[in-house]
Image 1 (cartoon, helix red, strand yellow):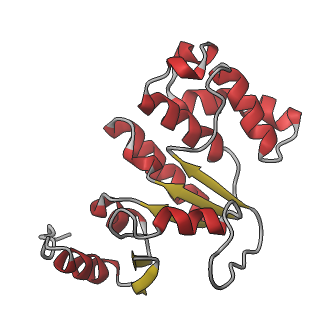
Image 2 (spheres, rainbow, N blue to C red):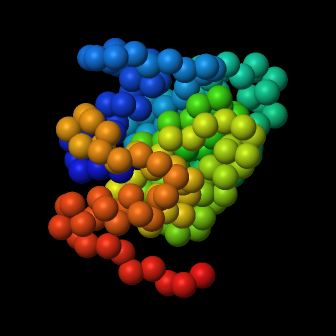
Length: 195
């Protein structure tokens, strides 16, 4: 999903996740929708370790599954020994990486990603893109909200352009819709390298 700040992207994700009632219309989902974003709730006074366990249990994993996946979640997040410290000691990037690692540890029917790929270094962005591709291949639906339009073009096979809570354009021709959005917002079409 693309659009200016305040266009309704995050609000739509929250409605799909069932965290916010729709003001108009209805939202129908089949399966569980998990919202992953830079504001996803982790408990700041608890350690990263405890947040991994609680987050996984909250997503419906059994204690045995949590135990089996715990180390791969910590390794994927890259927080290292900080896992034993309170979340309030984490940098914004570390917290976002841990949130992403927890939320993506379970194959979701619907995964809602709100700017979560924008944090972290280049290596983590590559890992997170690979993980999104894996989740999508497992037949789940992934919604991605990002202001980085290159990320949208690289990751998505469909795009929805929102403005003031309304769909301006939607479809599978991602580059064409991105160019229309850029032209409408004063950026002009993107110059793309030939593949």
